[in-house]
Length: 412
Image (cartoon, rainbow, N blue to C red; front, top):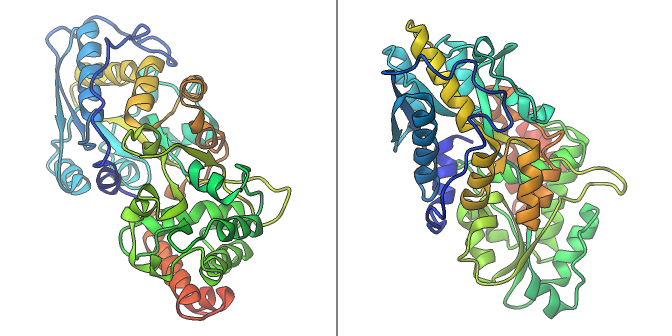
């Protein structure tokens, strides 16, 4: 998923405002202190961010301005709208990248790093200490740290507590796919489906929310014919067959969440942004993903966001930009972004605090360690995700078996 998709999904979030003063624990938080905290007087830096909903963009501006003040730097924080990836690539081609830029780890970081236009952060004592291995690797390209992770996204099952109570169903997480099918069936009424999932092609939603099921079934995203892929597509087929997932799901994308928030579905899959969405009109809970077989561990896919530094012939500006990134990545800032903006902090210590403050975040945080990063598939993922969408549609509304549908998209 590119940042533009994430931005579109988050536009409905209410503005929570900048509540209280922001506290910076020194300039580093979970990172070591900047190697240089003076000598930057007179340095002017530009920062690009692409996430334009509030309070996120206001928070980022505040963080960077506070850090710049501590470091003696002048900073211009800009939110870029439109096709951010294209803007980054055009700026790189013109040798006009901003000094600091927020980058998605699935597409933007590898594209820019492969062009040699990002600075090696390791030479400025920027480290990934305090990050889970799955998160630390998000800023790495070909063995070099080009971006410092500050926030991640993964996914969980959301459920309407009132719907469970009305059906007399205990709020117990389904352990297996069969459990989920049974649970969704028991929650289905004349006016309410048991679950809503996106099924449309082209917008990235279906593959994003399908991947945790595939991974939790032991599947390999690179292999559409793996048994885990078959089991996961068959799960969707069973949900449609028992009436708990409307066949109309194939026409719904990111906005399928509206079916859940309106009470037309009892469960859905979504990301951490809903944890801070105060417009949800009912009390909800969250579940981790079930697995294909009992006794196995669920797995999720992970999307990361890092701040990278543009390679610059001016070493003072490059060093100042690296120091600014380290300061922005403080534990206090990450917790603040999580509780107000709906992202999972990159730092493990900040994740623990987030769960203390927002208990429903637990399934998201638990899934971070060992999560799967689709960036390792490179540009191949763009083709693969459409294959999964096609297979899901063929199996659920086209009458194909899951195995047959997947073999067809794999060209077998």
